[in-house]
Amino acid sequence: MANRPSIPRTTHRRGFSLVELMVVVAVISILLGLLMPGLARVRQTTYRMLSASNQRSLGQGFTLWAGSHNGKLPPSRLLFDDNPDLAELMRVFAPLTDEERGVGSGFSAAAALGKKKRRVARPEPQPLWHGWDGLGHLFASGLIPEPTTFYSPAHWGDHPFERYEDDWERPGEEANGPPDHVVYSNYHYCGHLDDHGRLTSLERDADKILVTDGMRRRNDVAHRDGINILRASGSVEWMPDPTLMPKLPVETSRMPITFTYQNDVIREIFTDPWTKLGYWESAGN
Image 1 (cartoon, rainbow, N blue to C red):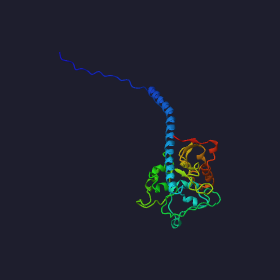
Image 2: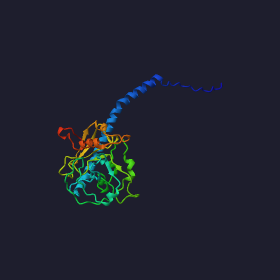
Image 3: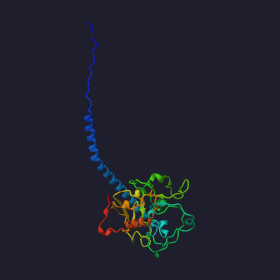
Image 4: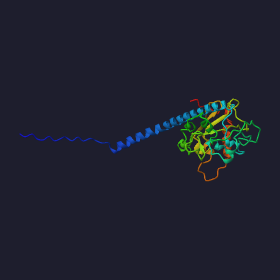
């Protein structure tokens, strides 16, 4: 009797029904909804810590600079003007004008923060031989050789490090010459003069705020709920201030920006009116 060919048995696998798939998707959505706020907070805290670390590095650079400059800070050419736009203290490089190439930098007795002129110490003028300015002096002098130190990982606006990466060459190392445009960092420098037009000293003004997170435009405010600040003593602190961003102008605004009001906002931060009220929170993280 011939063997009959065996017929393979077909197994029927039951798939997921539409209702089951919808239940799974709903559960996953709920879990993601619960996890995402926590992940966002972790990311914000990490960015705060990294930004604070960058500011501590800037503080170390100030200390090294002051050690060879009689305790003084790197100069900002912007403050030589009678009515400076304090928002531009975020620049680290600005091309020299013909007038600046022909004269020494020196220090001006002109009021730094909109005050009246007063007599200040006047060191011997030094020739302006490059366009690095403010915080940029720390890089140009080799005290902070890593350009990314001047940029916050939390920055979401128009001035990321990638935009200026090719511009960071120290004097004498430029392959194609210095930049022909302004280079901004993500941190705001107070400048070398205090609010009375006097030269700031790291030893005398240990509590003075030297650097904050950016305040040039709204999209320069890296942390939406506050800013890190660096004092002359080298300590970094966190200032919770969710109202700062709405006070600043928008970069793409069609209306001309008048910086009188913005100067007041920036001046208020740098003059630290909340210290005696215990408003500051340690950023020693």
